[in-house]
Structure formats: structure tokens, C-alpha cells
Image 1: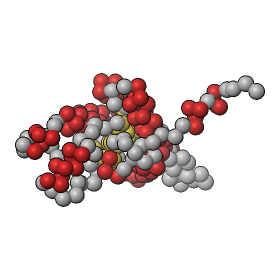
Image 2: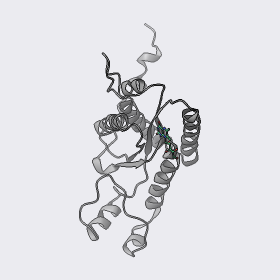
Image 3: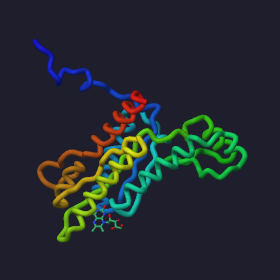
Length: 210
Ligand code: DLZ
């Protein structure tokens, strides 16, 4: 029997996230949906082996703020990665190590952790999460169009994969179902899980291509 694309090994590849650093930048509008999407993304990221201290989560007011936040989060991690240990020990202010969990201890312990590499590597991928629900005005159209264009620009300008985790739903029910918390007969599917998996795959592939 001939091979077809469904039998291609690429569909069965599991990606090891144990050496990856992933950032999640999320808007705060439609909080219940956002929370479920973040939980879905984090569950897949951790399932791939990413360690807690290599997951960084940053919130912003709304989806419109996602692109600049992603850009700065990526730039900040690149600056930290290029700052050498002597600068840090010499007291140069290059910002505090970024991590979801603050580095235990202070002073020497933090410096040691930073130098050991876990805190100063750049992010391998960023997931931008927002939930836009169509209202009575043109607001939805303007924001969804500009945010998707801008997030694409950030990933092409920086070379760091930016996963498009912005739901553009016509109703609240649609948004709930796409976060796996639908109120009807079916709860739907949590797209945050797919974004978490996409982040791990793209982070791995971009490393291989570099
Ligand atoms: C203003 C606004 C509206 C009406 N709706 C949403 C939404 O459904 N989802 C979302 O993430 N943000 C919304 N915002 C806020 C804008 O994204 C933005 O934060 C403000 O316009 C300030 O720039």
C-alpha cells in the first residue's frame, strides 16, 4: 500500500520542551475565557517538559496591547541573554531576571541562577492570548485586523515564533466553546492546548533551522 501524508512521521513527532523558555502574554478582557485558554496552553507546555521557571506570564489590558508587549518581552529576554555575568556582578542594572516564579533567595543566589543559564536565555516562543467578541460597532474589526497583522510583524522582525492565540468570536458562547468551557451540550475544545503545542513545536523547529 502506498504511503500518504497521514502516515508521514512528522504527524507522530513528540517535541521535548525541557530546554525551552516560553512566554505567554495575555489580555484581561473576557477573563473566564482567558483563564481557561491560559490553563490549556500551560498544561501542554508543561506536558512537553518545560520547567516552571521557564514559563513567563505577563498580562496587558486588552488585545490591542498584545503586539507591543510581545515585542518588549522578546527584546527584554534578548538583552538579558547578551548581558554577561561580569556586568551583572558589577551591578550594572539590566533588570531583574524574568521568570514566572521568582528566583529563590537574593543576591548571590540570584546571580548564580542567572549565570547558570536558566534565567538569561531568550524566549524560544511567545503565545499571545486575547479574546475579542464582536459588538455593535466596528471596534472588533479594527482590533482583530491590526492585532493579527502586528503579531505577524513581531514574529518576522524578531525571528521568535509568536503563536496567534487571539480568539475572534461572534458571540460569547463561541468564545466559551473555543476555550472548552461551553455552557451547552458540548463544552467544546480548548484552543489554548493547541497553542501550547504549537509553541513547543515552532520553538523546536526554529532552533533546528538556526
Ligand atoms: C475596548 C475593548 C473592547 C470594546 N472589546 C475588547 C475585547 O473584546 N477584547 C479585548 O481584548 N479588548 C477589548 N477592548 C480593549 C482594547 O483591546 C484596548 O485594550 C483598549 O482599546 C485600549 O487600547
